[in-house]
Length: 556
Image (cartoon, rainbow, N blue to C red; front, side, top):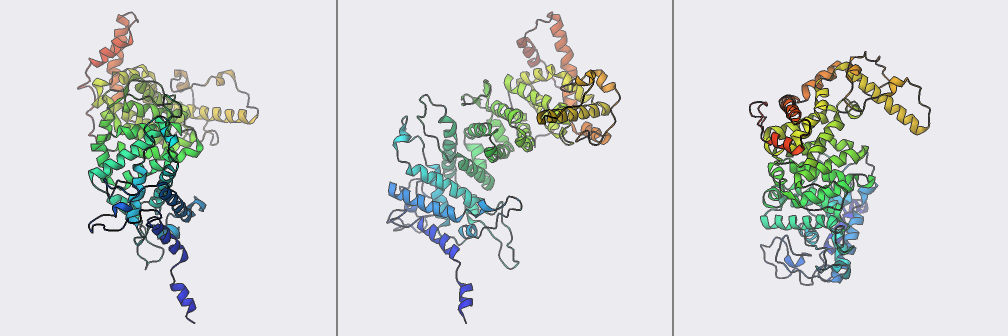
């Protein structure tokens, strides 16, 4: 009669499998040295000889290493990943990050060897050097086993750290204690400058390997790692969970060593549907870092690398690189990246007050983005799209008010596009309605043409559609067409226009244009319109705007 009760009290087989797997990862003579756990000091964080590589828990440790151990570790890691794969078969809609009971067993506080496992996996990833013997093609001469262990270790780290989402959540039953992820807690608890330096150096080395392997003099002479996406996610987890690590990276390390590979990976993945998640992580990393003053100041470091991309060449700083890459993400990233536009512009807005000297290329790209987001095609696509324009104006205002002296290129680019700013400043409701309706008509016509449906015949006058806000005055004076509900997906209203006028910080730009525009025109007329660009830039640099512009808001 006691058999059913005994069965209920018995430990679940799945939990036994998970715990056995975690024990196997540190089985003496199988995955670690036979004497790994002998004669360890009592105050040791973890048994140094049980670590798979030197690093956390023992920077000077010399754990046993062999191909046999690496092969065994790889097989047990595959078993751990197989036990943890349940989320792969869950639907994205209504996904519960706490649902997997397998991962619940693996990340509980009573999971065996949890701290040792976290340190071993981090060490084997961050201590890995993909250059092999340090010689061209050296990586091709070495065994594949260490690289396989690194890739599997990175995958296991991401799976274990991802369980449960952000923070603890109560269990379904009210009597159960709150669920947790011990690996997230342990990662957040890592501390010490040496440990942070080790983690930063390893992650930066692996992420930079992706573009360095494509940029060698001898083709294929440097082996490219395959687990760069997992390494990027691991960087994001560290920045997200360990504030002390994020602060150390910004203050004590060369953060530009992370900026370059993050920008490269985002640029390369912008058109690939399978790498949209990668682009999101790159964006979140930049957004997280850009919220700190030290990051934006560090971006003034000269950029001297040549990435294997089709980005325009420029001489400037890492801030220029970020601007050029994010501009490309907007103009050629496709609709899949539209939800990230606000994040892109927020990154640029965060760094703009500290950009000492933007290059000509970056300045032109910023103004080009402004023209794009103020064009009817984008501005009237949705009711809230003017928020992108507001962020761009904030970027311009920050540069003009805080870094005017070193940014003559941007000021000149703004002055040359004076008509675009004037059109936005003088926007009227009839003009906005007309532009919105015409935009929708062009969209419907284009869709019908793509589907092979004959477009409705229109008058010749109607075919002349303006491309941007530089419309003729006649367009705004003409009576607006009757607002047909099905004509436009979004039709501007008086309330919308009032909100736009209130939210767009145009006053600083307009004061700048009203002051500099006539002076540059006069300068050009005096030189019989043969004034070269250098003379204009020199004039802008020697002109002060003190007392003419509004008092800048404090940087928060």
